[in-house]
Length: 264
Image 1 (tube, rainbow, N blue to C red):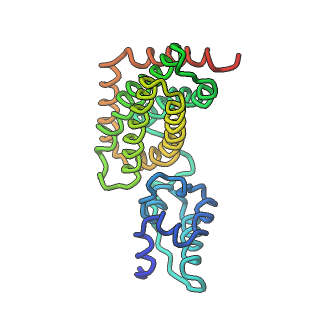
Image 2: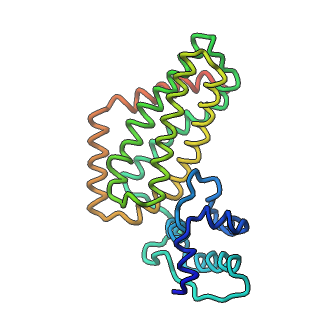
Image 3: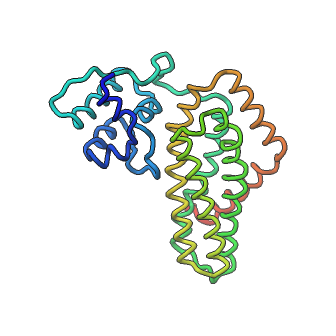
């Protein structure tokens, strides 16, 4: 492989975009949205492989990017992805389907946050309770019940240095900080601080879930061995069976919040 190609295939995508702004436009053509990513530390070759482009589109993307980096030069473009695992449709294995289904409840709560912040007033006792209920949902459903399955089980089967997984870890850590500040806002009766952290959480988790559902989970699914799938699913079911009250409890809370903030 040409050393110039190898250099940029192993360069962080954000650094490439910063050096060559029009590269993001090429990524956008294939619905690869690296610009909004919190870290952007995935290498170019990892971005290409993770998004599972077919051979034709992958070659077209890399060719266009290197035409920007090295105008008027011609290169032999290597194949990054794995043809035997490429697919135009995604059928997730049971453990990953379970995570996607848990996202549905989280997204229902996320959808309420912009509406809630329009009228939030922490001088009202019921609004303080509302924010504390959301914090409880995030901590005990989104984090301890859902994120723990990812961090303690699913991600353990992959290299800890994979940047796409590091991005997810960083999102989880940042989301926990927003929840801490939500609770502090209630303690201080600071509506502005509560709104800020509610909306920060909304923006972070909305993008986070999109990355997982559309990019990370399909990529993990393609790289899981059959034995791993069974082991992961078994461990997920164990968590669910040990805490059978969690799903109905937070579905009930979500229904209550929707009855208050969704238009009839």
